[in-house]
Each structure stands twice: as C-alpha cells, then as structure tokens.
Image 1 (cartoon, helix red, strand yellow):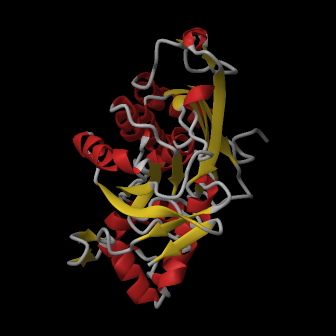
Image 2 (tube, one colour):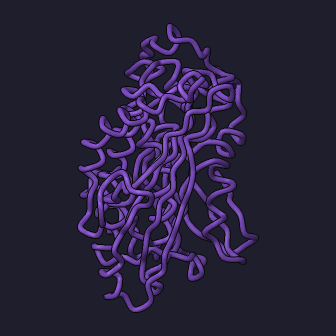
Image 3 (tube, helix red, strand yellow):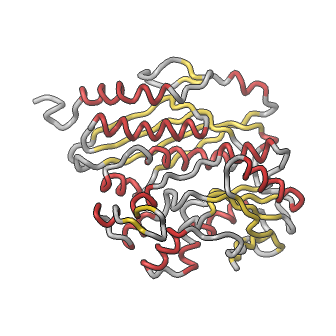
Length: 341
C-alpha cells in the first residue's frame, strides 16, 4: 500500500505545479520575494512606508456553486477570475489596493491539466487586479469528493492609507448613487440558478437569441473586477464617500452596508437596462422582482455614493476607463435601508 493507492497522487501534484508556473510568473510584482514552491509567500512592505497610516485590508471568498457549471461544461479557465474578483472587489470597495492573493483548490483527484487551467484563470484575475499570486494549495480529497469534483477559494491582502479608506461615514442626504455595470450574474445566487435552468450540457450549450450567446456562456461569464475602475475615479480627483460590492443578498443586503444611520438609498430601477440574463432567469423561474433584487446584482456590480457635484465626472471617468456606469439614484434622509422604485 502507498499514498497513490490511497487516492493521493504526489507526482500529479508536482506536475500541476510545473504546469501552473508560467501563469503565476505573469502576476509577479517587485515586492514579491522568493519563488513558487516555498512554504509561505513572501511580500515586501517597504513601499507602504510612504503612507501616513497604512492599513492592511483582507478578503476571503469562493465561487459558490458556480463551480458546478464549470464541471458540467468542462470549462475551467475562467472560474479562477471569479475567485479573485470576489476577494479583491471587497478590498477595493474599502479603498484598498490589492497586493497579493493565494488560492486553495480542493479536488477529488488531481488532474494536472485541469488544475493548471483553473490557476490560469486565477492568474488572469490577479493580472486584472494587479495583485501578485504568491502561493496556493491543491489538496486531493479522495473519499470526500468525487474524482471530477473540485472547489475553489481564495484569500487576498491589500493596503490603503487610513485617510483614504472608504467608510461611508460621511454619506448624507442629497448625495448621488452611481452604479457600475456587472458582467452578468457574477458568483452569487447559483443555487437558485441551478434550480431554474436544466444543469445538463446540452441545455447549457443551447444558443439563446435574447442573450446573444449560449446559456452556459452567459452563466460562466466571469465576475467583473473593479480595482482599476475605482482607481480611475480616485485619479480624477473624486472622493468616493461610500462603496458597495453587490454580491449575495443583492441590493437589499449590500447597499445598506455602506450607509450610516439616518439615511436611505433610493434606487431608480429604470435608470439603466437590466441585463437579459436576469430577465430570462426571472421569467423561467417565476421569481418575484423583490426576490431578484434581494439575490442578484441585477446589472450593477458596484454601487458608489458621491457628492452630487461629482456624479457626472465620475461617470465620465468610469466610461473613459472602459466601464459602463450610470447615475442610478440618490440618498435621502430616513431609516437606513434601500428603496427600489
């Protein structure tokens, strides 16, 4: 008896590392110390000495049951982007710059090419967010997971000067809400998605005229990363008073997280066009509108609260940075919460 016969292939692990090295190298920053394969990732903090009061920010998350679609469609090169996005977007909406990222892949069996494909997506997410991929772990779990199954999670660390943190504490009545477009469903609500649509390869590969692509392509579209978008707003000299990453819980749960007591966000649902994938999901699943806004991002992946005088400039800065953005509402005095009208 040996470890391989017990279900863990050490040689496959070595092969996975070799295959992923080319992707990891692309994410390196000057602050990274050492190479891939050490017991820990090392990152120099010398540059943050320039900050008055540096604050470390961290985020950890996974992709939820969206990974099930990757398995069904045998497409694994974008799910890693989702994993990075879920972590670095949280850091960015607090005003931080992501510094580095680590991933964790649990699988029933290590198929080196599949693992390398997953890490390719992780590396792409790191490139989009300018974070270094400084480490990770691939763990085989025979007997706990089926051979073709895996799960993916990650952890990111960022930094910002305390004076630049986005806290929401200065949001007041009269401020304006600017929404930045999502790329689709992102990485939340897939347990409901999987109840609405048939989770079979043939059905997922069916072309949908209203989507302009197959259902599977629409559902696997990776989560948009907003790090550079928020940097563009800051570079335009605009103060972001509050920022909300619209993830699980949709508008109703996430927007209030940036609000102080005594103010209420009022969102005009007709101020932008809700993407077709959400309209199809609501129709096919007979999902009430309130539940849709309480579960999904509905086309807005990041919500900003700004001084009214800065709103138009912010939309222009985001447009120039390649984003779609709209003025979607305002802040009013009232009980902390959200009104969608």
